[in-house]
Image (cartoon, rainbow, N blue to C red; front, top):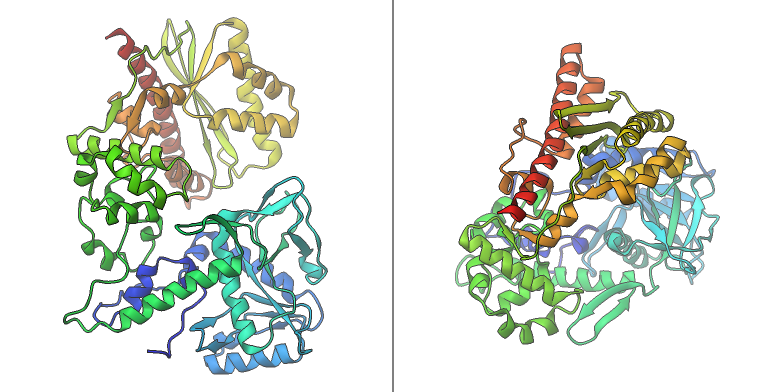
Length: 564
């Protein structure tokens, strides 16, 4: 089986999908297999279309081939047009289809091709470019590996100092390396091996720009049994991953359904399974007690799970019974790619024992927990829209008179000014309470609230917000720290888990959650009818009130542990 190709997503995707795709004995799913659809559904389509539209209107001579698909052109016809545009030296080519590389088993449709330095033979050379709806840069003083260019002068590259590429965004680099190999195959790869990503790294109010990465620069930290930790380039990483999937596809195609050897890859539950069309095929192949299915918080990664598998441990029951000290000598040399590998295994083993015993939350300390108290206590929780802006500050006040819920909210699309104004209203209310009750304590769960307070104070310089930030050290108490230091949870230690399984608290809403509340907020702002908007607002407020009451329930439960 030599005449097959893999697209640009294959190298960054689960190899089990490749195996299923080429296994003739497996029924194919009905849902689409184009992984790029997931980014489109997540809001990436609008961002991508906006960037591509800017490029169409950019340098004179830009060629837009996207309309060929809508016009019903065949892949061969689209390839021909793309080759013609490259041969003519077009400065920018959008929506092109590169010729198949049958020897390398590749097909590809880069978002954009940008004219770069000519090839060694003198032909026009091109750099591949992808548009992604996320940030790809981060600060690193002294770094000088990246270049950038604006969309309206995309070939005018300049240095991008003190910034580096976010290595956990490696996936898009593998896509670009795939397209680079295709350009090499058809003779149009630039003499300089660059690839561009237009990510959402722009400052507020500014246009997105291109981040240019040298595909031969060794900056991706990898691990192997023979070499240990080693820096590799995007091209090296791609060649390894693509080559493995070619091998997987070839082995899968040999299957007949009779006397076949075991598959060369085995399904393991990973995040990708949540949106993968092949999950319906993989799930029946996974034991109900499989470690990758049942341990969902701080899960072991694929290599860690495969290492345990090689030691005969694949299920929760097996790990619960295993002697970790005995398996560590064989386990650690194969999992050196992870920091704290031993601690991660011990944590997983503890969760496995809890699952085997039916225990969801377990105390790990013997000393008093020591949650502080005051005559006046406030439980604080905020709600944010999907753009990260805070539209609701909810507070539960507990004093000698009982408890009462107060909130500061605006059910409207926030601007920078209105978000600060709302936060300042909450801050002024809190400052008045602290002035009347100097020993007042504000309880919150994790640092989400304090981070947003600090961010808004720094951004605006508003005096009330700055004064509240001065209170954080002595008046704010993060309950999560007390829980983290004293408990371990099979499903983590989030507020929903600890409040419900430890403190016995119940939310009124059947589907409580921060992401769900963002949907409710959108309905509260843009709902079709006044009744729909009012209903969504009530749902958000009730949810927020339940969150602060849950925080109260947790701290009372923690104090009860010290008194029992």
